[in-house]
Image 1 (tube, rainbow, N blue to C red):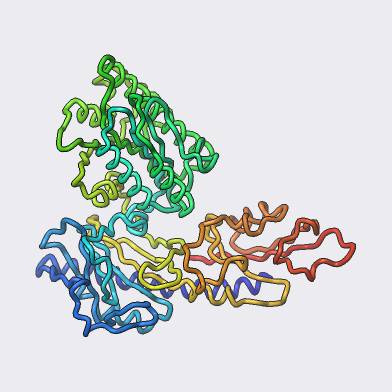
Image 2: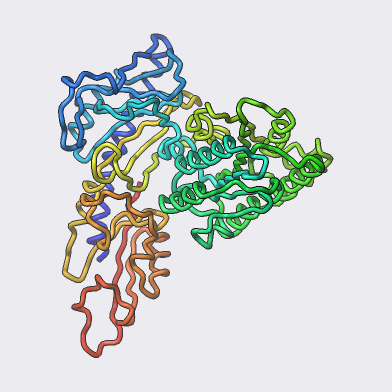
Length: 517
């Protein structure tokens, strides 16, 4: 058992190492180009949407028309005409990578200034601009620390239809910018606070932002209706802090987890007790955050109504973000400084992906320069599933953007998918948190069109005592273990061969090897 898994792990590791080499090579070229750009600017744009069709031909690997000799660019809404664009410097390296590495799909540089350069060149996202800096792969590469996020949507009586729509759209943008490295909850607040009811655990804890959780939360956001009661701001914050605290108590926190509450609100308080409302809200924030050593940041997004700005409301939302409790006569409970957030105004014309979708720029940049591997997702251009390997690019401590390489999942997994040692055995592959990448009960990777549900392996190996094996697999780099399982709780793919008449239990043997970085 152990020697076979070591062989398989070695094959997979060699593949990942090749892709890491490609990412590192692309990163070096980008960083070197930036040094050159400082003396003779590199700013030429090659728009993906204006490439003449004669320059492109259909390529089955990419499932669309491409040009294998050049890269091309898509831009975010506001890109400075002098922005750094290394695209033309990258062409020969990217073309060479593609020739010499089977299994590679798209390669790209996604810049902090808003330019997205992709190779091979092809037409995509040609309606409007492309905000690549709010894609989960960008967010998790430039802020790889885990983010614990609570989004609160104000749907009280004084929020107009226009404002309410902005809040719902903004909440969806936040959901689509995070991934399973992060934990999320969405709350609504009016006279009471509500959580997403599609899963019981959402009432108590933040949940890892897997594709399934994001889908449920997104459905919840779409279903919010305007309330006819006034907004009790304090109640919303009370619940948000409680969820963060429960989640912290239940898990070992890495020292570099960022905790943030994002409040989408009109900031309107009741007419007759406005000052009391504000004071009550800041008191809750002050008390609750002190239990968490003031480690929670608050970001507020002020929902504007048809261009009318309520100065009192803006001042209140700014005070929430800066946690100015002293201004309201709430004494500080701890000597620790608060982490000041910021307030931003949103109106109907705001580009939410570029404003709210980049909420993470408020979080500390810890300059973590490491490769990030995404879970599998569907390729929006071609067919089939891909995984992205990405790394940030820096010049000194200036973030330039990220380089990414999309890899064909079926290619990485071919050794696992087709491994068959004897009829009674099979392989599966999980990531370091226990999410399943490949298992025989899943369709073969090249047949999948839907993104796989990011599901814990415990749901596929659902037999008694597997919980212990799972813990060992995730904590011991190489090992094997045998468990005895009653026949009546066997799994469908523990083939019928095992059912000897009169036998009460059978042994299941596991062997595993961690695929090292």
